[in-house]
Image (tube, rainbow, N blue to C red; front, side, top):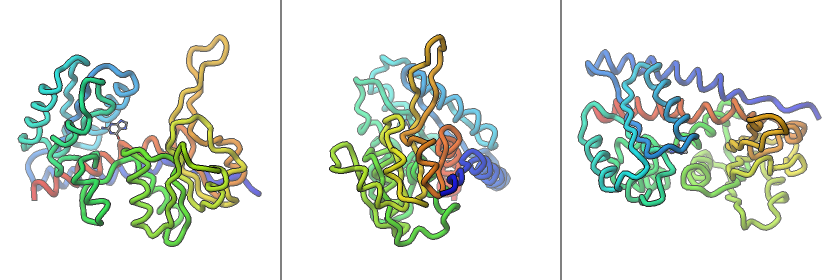
Length: 291
Ligand code: GUN
């Protein structure tokens, strides 16, 4: 068996950002203003700070306005809700993203429910979750939509393929399953209580790993020729004498790539797609809300 083809998410995301930038320029010419994305960060979670910085940079690079709101970790929930209401009412703001996780004293569902569903570029609001589940147009969560784009680019039609999604989060696993169903896959959602997980995964033409367990999915779980999408992003403990551990996914890449037909690397696979899709959702929001 030859080595799997590498699915280059970094290159695909760069192409998507270029297309978004063109649409953003058209929007500006028509509307007489730039499309705008508001990003709200509460607290100082280091990973979230990195994400938010990258979101802002790439939003501006695509020719859109980035409105950054940083609030201290101890901000009362009512203040965050008031900010979201203000952004809902601001005509310069087309998309609103509240970075998760929020501090423990805040109710995430309540905060998300306050975002205007037509500015909910994360696709987390129950209205958008319901739209996705019923096949209505709406906003779809960025990471699973990015995975679907990579799969369709690689495989063309996904119709009739067996897809196993490992992980059932609201952000990735559940919307991923909905999107694969929409593409006419036969979908299995596996999770921590699934019995005989390796056997379940061996039946998959498409494997989506989104569990947050470093290198959990092993070579002998993969059906020969399968397409493997690794959503995981885990930092291993640093080796002796070093300060930073290696970044790995949820899939044992070295092993799985001996069997898979194609596979996303970590980093450089799914990761760069998330922000590119966020920018795509934002320019779609701008056109819908202005039109
Ligand atoms: N935290 C981790 N991923 C995401 C995401 O896609 N959106 C938001 N808002 N928070 C996140």
